[in-house]
Figure 1 (tube, rainbow, N blue to C red):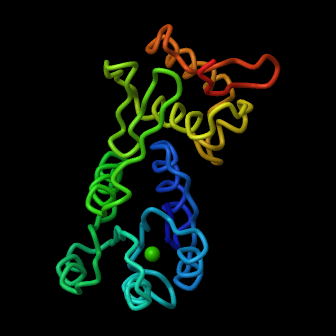
Figure 2 (cartoon, rainbow, N blue to C red):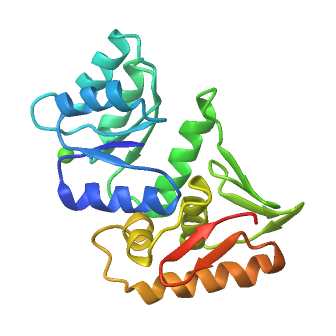
Length: 218
Ligand code: CA
């Protein structure tokens, strides 16, 4: 997911919410850098601030479309009165969100945008008998759905996206909670324990003594 936002505090927050939802996130603060990042990274979607210095969000989207790039775009705007104009531009803007927004609202909009764009509707990951749908944010042990909190889901999704790879608590903390997190590594242990309690014998999480955790079917 590419986040284009020139206000560092908002960019950090959006990136944090998205990472918790299991997305890999790249942040850019200018239109030029955003266009280059779309070309080099092919993100599943772009969360695009309208009010950027220099080339604004609308111009960025227009440049993408002119180049035949239809990567889904979720516009972020601080102004309600801008919304009609945005959607009237026929830029293939898939949705918009107005500042200030809640994590829940952002997650909902992102899911809507991904669902609408064909081919990236959802990513389903499976390790052992545990299966998660990243787009729908649903987790299953065999055929039964397991209800997870946002953070639990983000942690499990991160581990399952890199099966058998062992991560230290510090790595998990920065990937799932974000670099600005004040949470300690003990937080990771607590959430791992909660995931294990919820999945019981199906839990795909393995402890690697002295190193950290991995998702592994064996
Ligand atoms: Ca801005």
